[in-house]
Image (tube, rainbow, N blue to C red; front, side, top):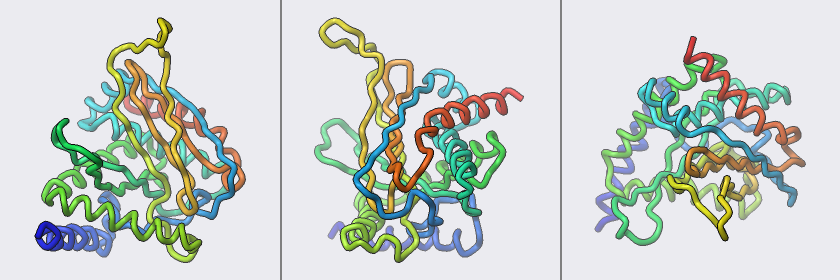
Length: 265
């Protein structure tokens, strides 16, 4: 019964996204499997690289508040700037923006058990050279996406997640990721952490870095964990097919500094 009720909602959501795509609307949530093919969307070998970086939480939160967005919006804009710089250095920046998949928790209370997840597909706006304009565009898209997802039931939102990840997983398992456009170019997750200092055997924990997975066709994963007064980034990639990704941590910090400078100006 839940599935039958959710189907019209899911159909309506996809129809709305399809209409945006047909009209050429760029500042909107995107359909899956419309991402450009990049260095991050190839078959991978077993090599992995993890890059670490930190950003200060309070200045990021202040920047978000000043522009009517969220911490997540600022981080997406910063990541978009870093990826733009990286792909330009590799002479591999596509004309259209990279698309990022953002897992969204649908839990409404602590008593809910298990995973309840949906997905938002948002442009990184890697084609946008202006740092502040990129942030404004990210805010516009995520605000609209939250509004659209808020109109459907949890069941429909979960079904949308399955609609994205099911085919992507099947393509990976069967070795056919290169036959179609990527579902997304990268995954970005922001995991809430402790707002208080943590200690282990009396020693203060200075940072917590997550180790996330990548797979064929989806070779970039950016995960952030908030820890007290900082945001701890871990960027997973495959150095065999993505040369130079050891610079992504530095590029992330540079993108943040440039965004701050643009906001002050």
